[in-house]
Image 1 (cartoon, rainbow, N blue to C red):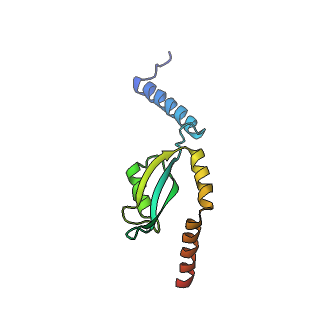
Image 2: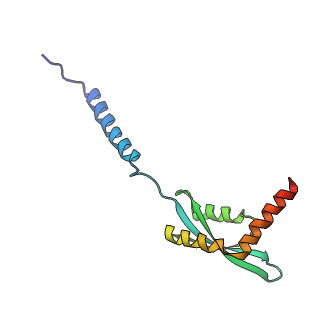
Length: 124
């Protein structure tokens, strides 16, 4: 006479099999969360004197970041003025890559980054 498995064991084995299926799907990349991409227009320069410059910057964040968190990240970027975030828009990855390429040729950003590197070299 064969013994029938208990109800607890049956439920346990079904749950275990379901979890194994989920983990195998997860490992194949089906649950991989994509990054979010943002276009943020920022103000640089002497805002009070009317000599400010607006520059679009392109950010990549984790998928759980909200627009408020993106604003906080942008406000902390070097050279951005108080209340310097003018516009935030979620964009596609294709637009993000195109924007990053444009920023490589932006004279103001090149100047900003080289000046920062020179300052680090002097302080060291």
